[in-house]
Picture 1 (cartoon, protein in one colour):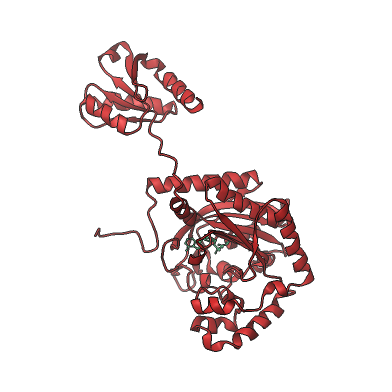
Picture 2 (cartoon, protein in one colour; picture 1 turned 60 degrees about the vertical axis):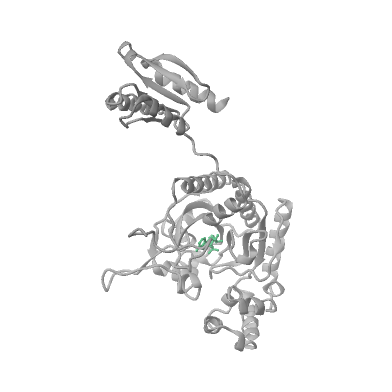
Length: 428
Ligand code: HAM
């Protein structure tokens, strides 16, 4: 056992893993940009109150999972690592007066989030989300646009069999009456409620619907359904979201028990699952509308909607589904030399080629030419540039390791020749 290990619930992304995350992140950002979103970045920590007020204090995320930063003195502000990006992005929207920008303001962010969750496969204490937020549009069309964007992301990165679950969780006009009905229902089953749920019943009954406790899952199957109690405006909004989804060809299933784990949601709520993995209760991603959040964080009443897709889970599913990650690209050329001791010349030639924006490696080990060439082959290099005696006449040998051919090139033409080979390789 090594003396030091990455903290429990965190992982090192080794270069191969990191390459997968890079691809997921860049695919997500490019996709969001195509849909009119602009990248933003907020701090990894915020005043705890941003999360307590935004996400809600009676939620797992805030009550159990927030990584709080110990204040450095009595009067210091209390901070916490971000468990999700929406509250911070909305805080930034208010702080920077984005309500005066053309609406909606469409923002995207991809980065690490922190939750003190019980670690298991697909559940980590530091994990990545690809997030989009459209702030200032009451919907319902944008709701469907965002759900379709999420589904397209999975398609573009190669996840198969993604299911879309949607629901409406009402608004301040109809939810209170529903919550009363829900509370009455649970009061009739007090004996079945685990301690946390019993404790939350009076403070935040909706959270009981989201409980992962097996006893609750069974009980919740017969709980009153929000979809039966939506007010006229919410019902019309939900119906229109469905019309838009259908027009876009997005297959979806209405799931009346879907309430999401954060308190800021109103109306549209949705989650993405991989078929056959529902048993693990692990959503691949989720999101929804949060028409009260901007006001809750001190801004003017402004509607909003967004999603967060968990990239760790996407990487896991891609591996499970046997989707081959693209092979790591070797260098265009490795600079090798007949004189093992002459690292100066090898490094100088490589440096000039790198300055010309070429991807090259210099062999800086002091080993025989044959060994240097073997290593270049193992690297997956396309060319070996061999420095020998003819360098005195300004010439080097360029060996095409893939074709098995070799020719003499003037050192002054080397960068141009290699660049041309790279271009024709990539376009041919
Ligand atoms: P969330 O459902 O809490 O929503 O998280 C979104 C996604 O992040 C989850 O579906 C899951 O894929 C991933 N995730 C969450 N916790 C973990 C974990 N411990 N380990 C690995 N992956 C995890 C939100 O965070 C909202 N901010 C989404 C949103 C944006 N709603 C509106 N705008």
